[in-house]
Amino acid sequence: MSAFVNVNGRLTDAASAVISVFDHGFLYGEGVYEVYRTYHAEPFLFDRHMQRLRASAAMIHLAVPFSDAEIRRRSEDTSRAAGLGLQADGTWREAYVRILLTRGIGEITYDPAATPEPSLIIIAKPLPVVPDTHYSAGVKVVFVDPIRNHPRSVSPLIKSNNLLNNALGMQQAIRQGAAEGIFRNYRGELAECAQSNLFVVKDGVLRTPPLDAGLLAGITRAFVLEVAALAGVPAEEAVLFDRDLLEADEAFFTSSTKEIVPIVRVGESSIGGGTPGPVTGQLLAAFRARAEELTRPPQPA
Ligand code: PDD
Image (cartoon, rainbow, N blue to C red; front, side, top):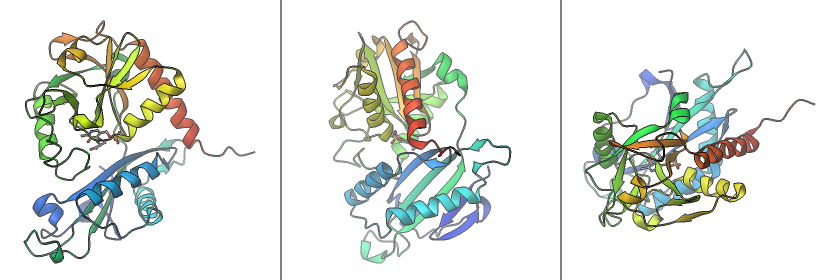
């Protein structure tokens, strides 16, 4: 892994990147984060990630004493140090960038007065490759046993470093040979996946659970809804249950690093015909075209 890391302003290679064991991000999982990818070395939807980072931080009463420009500068420097971007042979090596903001280093106490300075950590590494077959043939998902956090517990709207619930759900999915785990909420409605948002298509209409179902306000989720509107695909937020997924014509999940991944099996049941459907294909093509449009580098005259 050729990662580079910026720890509180200090740029290092992966092996030298260290943080105090008294950081409350480590001690308590107290912190928030973002993950973005690049297209042509251009951070994708960076402003939206910064808005969500600030919203997450506000929900845990954590100040963000950095401008968006400063976070962007550190992120881009870290990506460049990792050798990402335009290569000598003219190809692009795209970045996965994880920005973590924690409560900071201090005495072992929940009193925030002990941690006057938050820690800002930026990890840049090559964007993990999603096998082409995931897009062309689709993947299997499973329902998982843990429920998504109750909104009045650690709210799913907070993109929190406290990820034990997600990890447990995802690890169950991995044990069952699935690419994602589907979380229900405390009311038994579908919420989202362990690391992505969920969509279904039925009779040509795209549906995704509303934020009120208790899920992360995915940036890709919102972008897909915009792309659907541009492509003329009717879309709505709707309360969904197991049967809405099991009886869907098509289904997919979305995230910053994976775009749109078709779901063709839920456990032992196949979705639609067991192959990615036409609406999913149309949206993936429209998504990529729009991402390209928003990030295309200026062409030499
Ligand atoms: N995960 N829901 C959860 C629980 C997530 O962790 C993520 C993203 C999403 C999709 O959000 P977005 O479209 O803004 O990436 C939904 C990131 C990629 C991660 O944890 O690595």
